[in-house]
Structure formats: structure tokens, C-alpha cells
Image 1 (cartoon, rainbow, N blue to C red):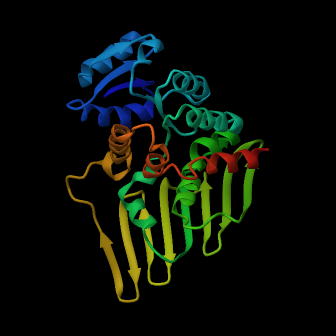
Image 2 (tube, rainbow, N blue to C red; image 1 turned 90 degrees about the vertical axis):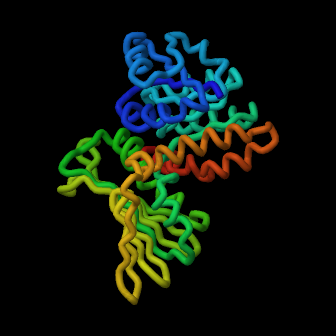
Image 3 (cartoon, rainbow, N blue to C red; image 1 turned 30 degrees about the vertical axis):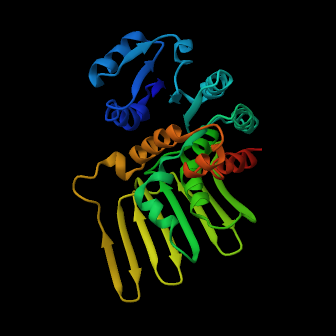
Length: 302
């Protein structure tokens, strides 16, 4: 397949571009950048097929992976969907929920895949946590050392991770939620959301002044409690004792964090797309409730 890459910011360079480089034996990658020199440098470093400074040259792509800054997301996605191209996009889609819905509706109308890249949904240990039965309390926390963030940025770019992960891990429909937020002069310090379903209580937290950069997930069930630290360190506590489960020595960081499985899943499922199986593929790509976090953040900021 022919794949367009738009944008080469920090996350793209760290997480996505190295993954794309491993797939060149089966796919052709073309990099778009307004800065031709930057694009050529990437092409030469990873031996990608081509570069372009014209977005229209990517209209012939099977899919575009959009890694541009959030303010550019809506226009880019709308352009490619309108021209019949499947779209993968980094979170957040937009800080305007009406734009989020507009893109989803356009993709459905055009019978195209519009995939939002929440890598944690594809992280192997998170996938294992999702499969646990009889979950009753789930806590997902993202902490920073000692910072504050612009409120909108902090919610859409940082807090959206634990919130979406929690929503993904829940097995039942959300009934209600409560928000506890601390900010100073529109600078985010802490936020806690408590979500209720019929069978579960879910808690998503961000503490910008915690003294450490950590990401933790705890899932409690009737038979065991499961702890995951930084998507890698996994421990299960049972009445009979503790079990520590480790990755293999050769497992890469991008695999552990879900980027590699996510990109591979998108391309595998796209190859199966035949025009009649859109909903099935969107489910396979874990897109159920994928915009719920955007909706909740919009409600918090309203």
C-alpha cells in the first residue's frame, strides 16, 4: 500500500517514524513536509520511498497518518476524507468537539476509516487488563514532577491519556461521572474524574505536582488486583502471593507502549477493508467510544 506521512514532530520522530521504517518491505511511505530539507533528511535516514511539499500528491495514498499540530488536524483530516483517503490521526482530534463529530460523520458518509491513535489501547499489558473479568474498581493515573499546564492543553494533551485508557478498560456503559479539578489562573494542577457503570467504579487522575513522572493502572477484581507501572512493570496480587510478569529481553519500547502493534493493526485491517466491513474493522481497531474522552473534556471546559 501507499502511505502518506504528514508531520514529523517529537512524538512522530520518537514513536511512529521508527515503526514505519520497519514496514518498508511491504508498504511504500511518502513523507510530506513544508520544509523539504527536513523531509529529505528523514527520507535519507530511514530510506523512505519519497518526499513531497504538496499535500495533493498524497491524494493517491491508501491512507495518511497525520502527525501535525492539533490546530491543523481538522482541516487536514477533512481534506483527505473529502478526497476519499482513509485517515489515521494522533490524539487529540480537535479541541472543538463539534469538529470531532463532523470528521466522524464525514468518514461514515464516505465509508472511510477514520482512526484515532490512542497507543495505550494497543499496549500489550493494557490489552491483558482489558480481558480481566469481574473488574470492579479501575484507577488510571498520570503524574508529573512539579509543573502546571494551560488548562485546555493539560486536559486535551495529557489528561486525555488516562481518561481514554480508563474508558477503554470499562466493560459497561457509563452511567454518570463526577469531576474534581484544581487550577490556578487557568493553570491545571490536579484533576480526578470518577466514573460509574453498573458494575464498576473508574477513576482517572492527573497530578501535575506529584514529585515523579509515572503512569500507573490498577485493576481490582474479585479474585486478584493487577498493577501496571509505566505500561511495562506488571504485578498481580492474589491471596496465594504476588506474581511479577516481565517482557522478553528483545521486546522493543515501541512494542511495549503500543505504537508498533497499533500501526501494524491499522495496516493489516486496512488491507481487509472491502467497502462492506467498515464497522467490523473499526471495532477491531478499538475505536468504540474513542471520542468519549473528547466529549467529557469538552463538557469540563464548557
